[in-house]
Length: 371
Image (cartoon, rainbow, N blue to C red; front, side, top):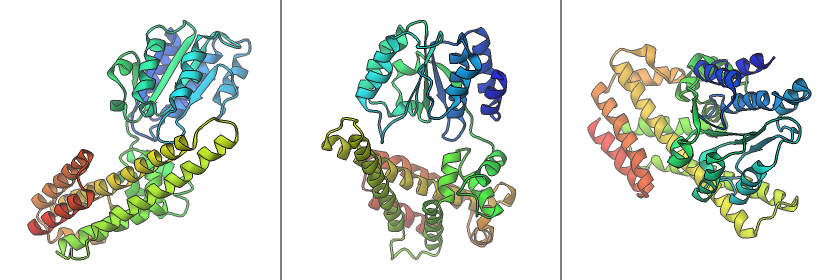
């Protein structure tokens, strides 16, 4: 049963499956870093791996495994810490992981602590966790999950055994997206396109199939259509900024409501803590949507370059082929490739706190002039 559970969780992640199976056979290490894109299966693999660890040495391994596999898990020797909002709360990392890790297992021989979205830990939390990683009790195993491992301190990452998760193949993503609520009413052509635009990220694929994602794709299409026609007087890029702002506001409000509910349930937080955490969540969502919009612009230009060069088989936007073909007939492949590179440069530039609107205005006017 153990191998079957882990094999199912890592069905499309051969390297991770081999590494984790070998770890269970030889005895798991004290700390792991599961790294790879969102939606690649890190959480499922971590739960299956943790279940096998707590089952080893338990009086009833099957029952221990069964409880550990539940989400949320009632097993007292499995602690799963996910961020409440944009970041992990420092006190929760200290109380639920660092201080709790000194206590012996409640039932079996092992305790497992999983920190989801580990990059969302503040530097203060990461530095506090360092001693636990350096000198953990023999019965403690930590699993850090991260889609952005560059957000972890080197002192943290270097003390964990890495387990890499690759982006899911587009064909696999198509099947998974079709089974989601977002994909239930979508046409096959749209799902095929989204599976490629998502770059192996299931969560991104679900976003692109949502009303927000569909609107975002529509705005990108409109912006680049206007750019090619040199009709930028209406500043179509503002719609992209508006979409990002609306998504950020929605996320901020949802985070505020969730945090207030938790506060009413007994989790201590000041009004300032709730406001600050909600605002961080909103800013993070706004940045995510704006960045995704720009990435979709780069991918549209990439598709134009492929079509202009006669390579239709590698086009991502398969549900927009008719429009892409008509646009590709009027552009130079070199212009499209250079345009995609310019968009990527703009994405990187936004990290430097430049004016977003001015940056987008300069980008699309430059593309229009050189088209």
